Amino acid sequence: MTRWTDMTGAARGAEYASRFAELEAKGTDVHGEAQLCASLVPAGAWVLDAGCGTGRVAQWLHRNGYECVGVDLDEEMLAEARRAAPEIRWIQADLAALDLAGLGLAGAVDLVVCAGNVIPLVAAGTEATVVTSLAGALRPGGLLVAGFGLDAAHLPLDEATVTLADYDAWCADAGLSLRQRFATWDGDPYDGGGYAVSVHRR
Ligand SMILES: C[S@@+](CC[C@H](N)C(=O)[O-])C[C@H]1O[C@@H](n2cnc3c(N)ncnc32)[C@H](O)[C@@H]1O
Image (cartoon, rainbow, N blue to C red; front, top):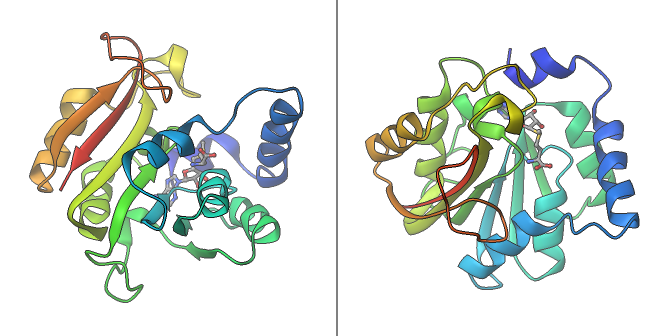
């Protein structure tokens, strides 16, 4: 069971989607993750939204000219994505057991994005496998962009589950090197704080 399922139990898709819809209606910019991705690769690029949930990142990118595919294990979250954007390919799968070749994703993708604490929320002990799988989806030169909390204040968990040192080591083992690290999805420089957005390159 992923830490996400453990944490949320049932009935999370509609609630998650409406929380972001409310924020957007109040004028909050909820598209920082997608906009950072758009600053890294040009329109027309292939993007894998890994742990896409309700698909908000892929949907924005799709509206702005990107080719997107979303993967998530949680069918309730995916149901919201499918309802909102049936034209996008949404795949129910475990990121720790992705059949990249079977899905046509092996070495095919320009950018993989993990927004919303996906890496700390996968099942304990599967993180390195997930990173290896995501790296396998990238074409040479492709980018893995992942933002997540490094302490309880920046996570929906009681304690951090992933350090940057761990994450960088999993990436290195998967053939990825660190290109940039930000403190926010707005691109502020990383200052050692409790949240980081890391950009690794294959
Ligand atoms: C906090 S939500 C973020 C959703 C979306 N990326 C966003 O930013 O709105 C975390 C998502 O990661 C997904 N997830 C966690 N572990 C996963 C795994 N092993 N395989 C696929 N999805 C996973 C959960 O199902 C959940 O939808």
